[in-house]
Image (tube, rainbow, N blue to C red):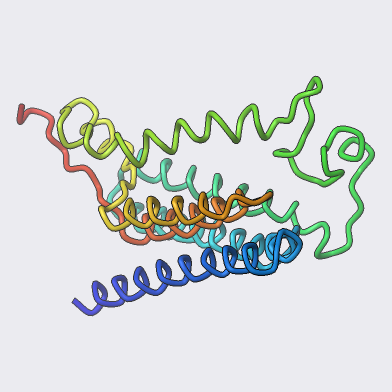
Length: 226
C-alpha cells in the first residue's frame, strides 16, 4: 500500500510538473515572443536536458525490470526490458549529442560533413539530401506512438492473439491517466504554435514514458482460455 501511494504521488508530481513546464513555454512565447521561447528550448538548455534526464530514467527503470525478471526465469521478458533500457539510453544520449557540448568535444569530420547541425548524433544526419530525423524519427514515430497510445491496449483487451503476444513480450501498456496526460500535454504544446515547439513534445513523451514504465499495465496470459 505504501509503495502504491508513493507511485501515485510521483505520477501526480511528474504530471503537474510537465504541465507547468509546457505552460511556462507558452507564457514565454506569447508574452515575450519567439526569442525568449527559443532560449527556453535551445540546445543544451533546460528543456533538452530535462528531456534527456527523463529518457535516462526510463532506461534505468527498464534496467531495474531486467533484474526483477531474472527471478522469473522468463528470458523474453528480460530481453524486452533490456531492449527498452538500451533504446531509451540511446535516445537520452542522442538528445544531448552524447554530451559533446557539455564536455566541449569537437565533432569528427564525418559528422561535420553529414550532420545537419554538425553534431555527434544520428537523428540529425543527412542521407542522400534527406534528413534522417524526418525519415525515421518523425512520421514513422508518430504512427508507432499513435498505435501504442490509442490502439494497442484496446486491442490487447479484445483480441486474444494480440493479448498473448503482448504478454509474451511483457510490453508495458499505458494506464488511462497516462493517456490523459499525453492528450492534455499534446494539446497544450499545439496551442503554442511557435518554432521548435516540438522540443516540448519530446519533453512530454519522455515524462509520460517514465510514468508508464514506473506504473505499467501488463496483459494477462489467456492462451487456452478462449
